[in-house]
Length: 302
Image (cartoon, rainbow, N blue to C red; front, side, top):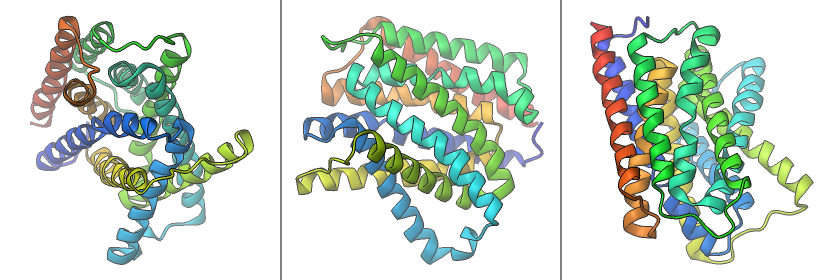
């Protein structure tokens, strides 16, 4: 069990929830940018590029010493963390384009089960029986929200769910990596160099497969991408990696299951991609699982 003070653990849990709420707005940005003519592959690159530039500017001015790290650490963060983040960005945007916001976000939350299963052997953070039960409640909620999604496009096929599942697996991978790296190299180097590494990986991949990167053609689209990168990459990633430095990977991953709640509410209000009754029942189970993890976490700390 972690020796972090109870107050620090509570702060980490709140940071993970805050990051999830910011990520819950991602679908709104993506859908509007797709409608503005920005392809998913380009958005998968431009979003972290803006996030990385903001992170480098802020910490380069305010805490330049925090960016100093060994060459070995730099390679681990840029290649390991960058690779996981890059795969996630591509899979997330392609799934969002194919099957819409609620289904993508729901499939994304395969991640907590993977994290809980892998955190024991990989990180030595074995979950309690209570936490495993809460994972099952959360997963049940996730899949009910998939079943209750109103929005399924005419071209719905196997590709969209496959991209969503890959997004979930890569999300789990960088959660586990973030827990490993942030406690060894520090939060600032982990978030900055993982995000920057993802930009390099995505640029090389897109240039080799697409031959070019299609850029937005309007000021409004560029502004929207800048806000998207600032809120859902720079701020949210920093909060999440700081949370991973304070609490176990499984707790952080389960806390972020609040994201489908935010995504469903925003999609219902702004995109007409809402949920039927069974979907809202699923969201209620997700909320119950997240609250349960917070309550049991305080008991475990005591």
